[in-house]
Amino acid sequence: MPNHTNGSSQAADSLMHEWILAGLVSASARFIPVPFVDDLVRDRCRRFVVSRTLANHDTKQTMKSLEPLYAVNSGWLTGCVGVVVKAPLKLLLFPVRKLTSIITSVRGVPLEVMRMVLLGRTLDRCLRSGTFETATTSPAVVNAAFASAFAGMDLRVVRAAISDALAGVKGWKTSATASARIVARPGNASGKELDVPLQLNSSVGRVQEALERPSVLNLFSEFDHRLERQLELG
Image (cartoon, rainbow, N blue to C red):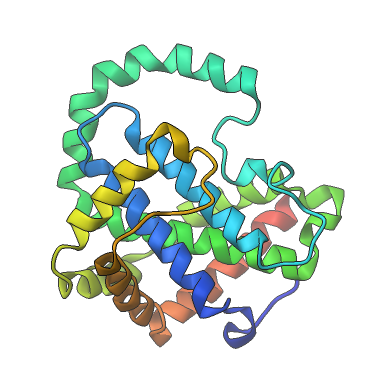
């Protein structure tokens, strides 16, 4: 994947807005006391990020070909088997996992927002550079590299920046959680749209300003380099 400067690699403001929006909605699913909702909302928000980013490019890639970037278990059979095997354990651990996710929301919400933003940026860069045109950098390979690169990042700076931005907005959590409930409905499986109130959009604006700080832009560049190294390692 060719290297880009911060200026040239930044997507349009509208795309960044949508990535942040998806991150806030996905992160807020932790506040819904229903088993499996977290995973469902997260996957649909990832699908939304991929869908909106893809729509911004003239490419032969499709949502189907990019499925590894947004579907935890690609393939109907694999997904069904995974659900059957993991469901009892998830139900058993649900109270503990839910309580933990709520307690750690100060850390978890900014990280989920950043994960969605970096996913969108990564896909945007890959589509711009033709990364998926070679067999060695398929969407599945890029997804694995993305996970490794993200896991190795020190995101304390961006975590603080996003937390500060959200601290100045009243009611963002209520609005985002309401949106997460809507995303979880059966009729929203396509992930093409996120139904959000205007108040949440103002929260997105504050976060977007925070992500334009030089310290955060440097983290974007660091992530890009980490991702490229992971792709080189195969």
